[in-house]
Image (cartoon, rainbow, N blue to C red; front, side, top):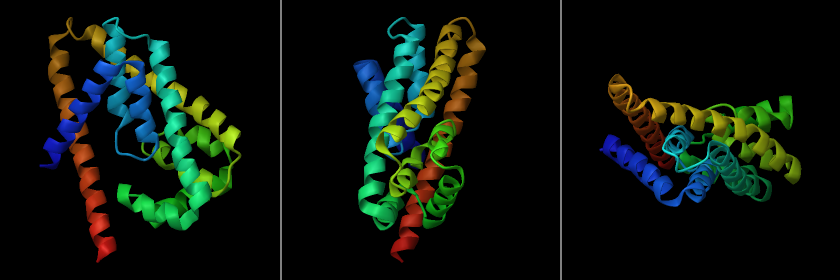
Length: 207
């Protein structure tokens, strides 16, 4: 059942981008950066495949994705800065953010300072939650915005470029079809496992 749900989610993501273009890319990346489980590893490569078909521009796709990251990250930053640690934990548990994970992020932020926001944007999973400890630490708002954009843009560009190159090779390389189906299965299973872990943690917290 979880696999079916995640496969449906991936189909919804691709349909939203196909219908809405740059606005869809920005909106979906905003949701991901606001700690909603919509993986950029699906969002940006599919947007890149539309670049290969001539429907979108690579640089505009990367910029739209990065701007979306700023928008969603601002929401998470506000939750951290205004609500504090207690609110972050209460809200974060809904998306699998445990107290241990938050403490680790806070320690990393305390050690490396505001540069953590930039470097974390280049890392899977971590990039989604780093805005929360940045908000708790009251990182200056505009510095947060600049570091978020500078870190998010190359991440979005790299994923979109991969999607573009795969899109260009799609018709020329039949073997790629099988490889991509296998990759899709791995992604869906990984997301299903993550969702199951989140649900299990929520059940334990209620117990």
